Image 1 (cartoon, one colour):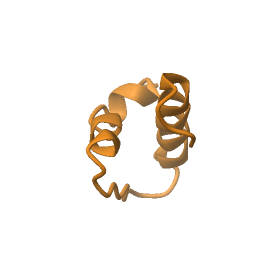
Image 2 (cartoon, one colour):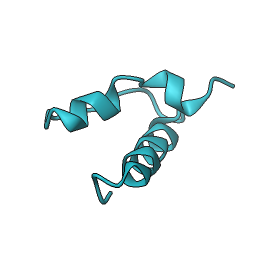
Image 3 (cartoon, rainbow, N blue to C red):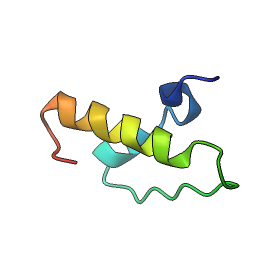
Length: 50
């Protein structure tokens, strides 16, 4: 299994730039897992409350 953070590495940077992020993929490809990981990372940074 590929680590969740490496599947969408540009997402935190896009959020910092206040860009809109859309995740579109087939079912059961890990979209929710990736977004949860990104949310945890942004919340841990202390700059965002996700």
